[in-house]
Figure (cartoon, protein in one colour):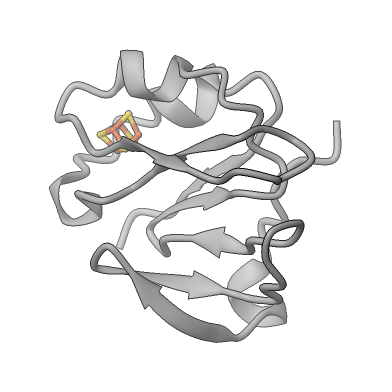
Length: 105
Ligand code: SF4
């Protein structure tokens, strides 16, 4: 499965901030939403709102964010508490579509 580009920090640009974390473009709403977060990065264009990451995270990093009109799903797991991540990798392993890339500092 293709999944999030592990090289996204080299290949993409930070285009904005959202909920305290960076957004890596391209962003063209509602169909292209980019990657949210850096050390805890979720490719919103791949996320299907499965919710496994939200369930497994021991420190509650994620919150749902509504994304009406996006072709993959109408809500996304947003890493709003990215600084709380303890890099256990549970979310990256649990994601059924490989939308998450965890990069310990
Ligand atoms: S790596 Fe672990 S602590 Fe960090 S966001 Fe994923 S599940 Fe939560």
